Length: 252
Image (cartoon, rainbow, N blue to C red; front, side):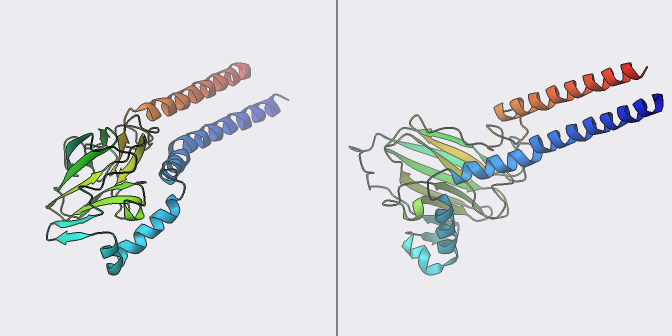
């Protein structure tokens, strides 16, 4: 009988260990990937079609002209808008300039990322003319792209800057009237997943985009997402350890 109880205790302890490992895996691997994908897909009601359309036109040289593309030895600008006022705006509220630097070797780089651009958060008033200077200090090309803009003004719903390695490009666009939060990222394969992700908040915005290194989501950087998930893991671990201690006490 004593041997049988010992076997049951061992089985129970093994079960708790497996349960703890599964919980940790779900919190640190599965949920972050799901949340990041959900966040990107929710930028507008047709983001999957939009992304497909962008990739198709990006690869099609004839489609480039359709997007109002300008290209030189430094890179390219797509869908630049310097004077077309968005629907509902009485005029330009103000003009703002942002200097964005892509630099994978920067001191501000977040641990766990391969690529980075700074700053990652941009806040403007509705109907603002926004000029972005995109400086690429890396040896590979990078992009600064805004998704979810009105399609009647911006073909494909996006504004796009691409700077070749060691080059700088400048582009201008005018943000719409609505309070909204827009995804900003590098659309080159795997660059967003490796750290090149940010958000543009117009007015009050429409929420917070997850997965922005150092700001939100599941890059382990001390942001709110990290704190909440870490708290769950620690709580789960403490409960598991208490149960193990109870079982060991009963065995003795």
